[in-house]
Length: 223
Image (cartoon, rainbow, N blue to C red; front, side):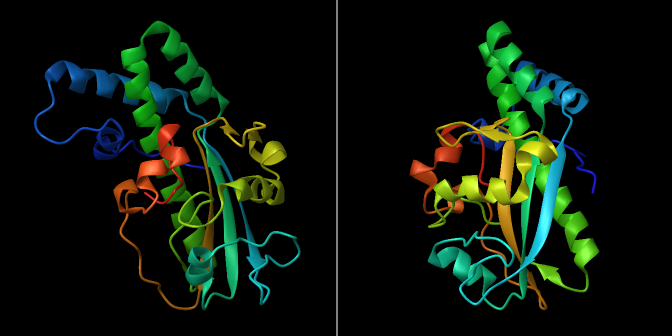
């Protein structure tokens, strides 16, 4: 399944920039448009996903991966299987961000916000494509390590199960940071009936103030 970056939602990028609303100064709007175009041209998104049956204890059948926490247990309640996904903007976008940090920190901040919106679009498109392939079953919302009470430490296990290094060129630092940083992993349930969606957006998360993803300029994939 081909990863697709189809748009960079301006409202999403502005949210990452902390914009509180109102008219944008023309020069800022021009800077954002320029960074959006540059990123659309440079990014080479990649993605991988796998579907697993669910054991009674919540483990992914055929693996030793068992997502921890009550939040993910509730999400997967009533689901007969689950999908693990990983998506990245690619090394090219990472290199672009690093170069921009040397050339212009102002542009680097804008580009980083655009990249955050871009990886969300890649994830949204991936989930849409997976849902179409799994129809008439339905996907739940996506839920990532570090969100709610799903431990961030399980990021490494999820990446191992998906073999992200070989499949999409993603690695984890000793501290658990994904490289390229504009990478999202998530778990989704596969249900025979549509499931209610929670309020979207980082501000709706109980971990908003302490979120490790937000502090690094990325998201957990929920927003």
